[in-house]
Length: 119
Image (tube, rainbow, N blue to C red; front, top):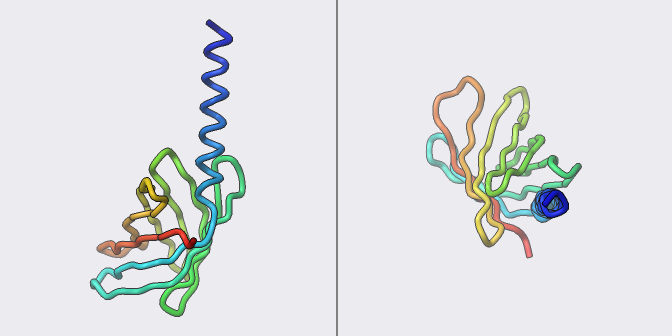
């Protein structure tokens, strides 16, 4: 029984590692601002450990950087854009698309953002 449980635990760790690895890459960005206006651009996710990654966005003439993490089908990132700090929470879709909502500390509202993997 202990061997079976250990095997299951090791399989779980391998699954988490594979999930973290599969999130890395370059994505097309399509989003909306708080006022509903649209923006687009590109994001790059770089896996940095079994549980974390970095993310860099180039959108609407500006850039931002953050730290990110995946947990099953949830993917989140804290970021800095200029002097503002923000948070984005995505759902990882079956096709690898990330669909989410974002906000900026101290501001009312939220925007939407979809990251589509580049082929």
